[in-house]
Amino acid sequence: GQNIDQPTEMTATEGAIVQINCTYQTSGFNGLFWYQQHAGEAPTFLSYNVLDGLEEKGRFSSFLSRSKGYSYLLLKELQMKDSASYLCAYFYGGKSTFGDGTTLTVKP
Amino acid sequence: DVKVTQSSRYLVKRTGEKVFLECVQDMDHENMFWYRQDPGLGLRLIYFSYDVKMKEKGDIPEGYSVSREKKERFSLILESASTNQTSMYLCASSTRGTGRHEQYFGPGTRLTVT
Image (tube, rainbow over all chains, first blue to last red):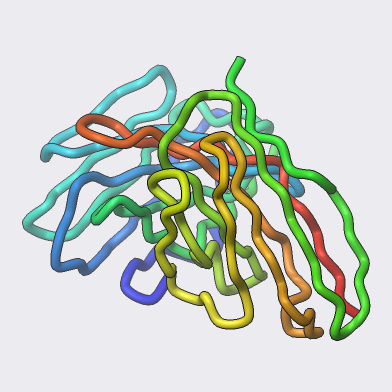
């Protein structure tokens, strides 16, 4: 994505914690999404933040700071099945703008 | 169980052919989207529609057109396919109005133009 950035690749160990960062620049903002996409499959919704702070959902948490244009996705107790691409997207004007995705590889 | 379906998983077409990609959702969603996904370029929005017969250009509309005659169906048309349109095409839908608007994606169509 042209004005949304996230790291291209990350590697972590099974059972560990990993944080995937996302920064964005936009003139208007109505929310921040995280999606998970396994290889060869469609993206699926993970989380949504519209206010500053942390949203927790099981092993996954997402944080948002609107003033800093910054979000992160935190994955705890990593499992092999968490190996996937994680897409950050901001929402404004009825549509989402996606980052290029972070490919996470979980190793035993 | 919510569902977005696309007419084909794999499609091979020749340069210059007219190509139709169909998408159907069963969730009564107002918004529908067409993206293409290429390695290193992420998901890029081609067109979206927020109502029947309405359409808006996304970030890369050139070479594409769309049609939305019914609420549940959103079609992407490549008037004259070219090799640089070889890509994975993803359709998505979402609700409109206030609140969360996560998108539900179809399984994708991998189009190869030779």
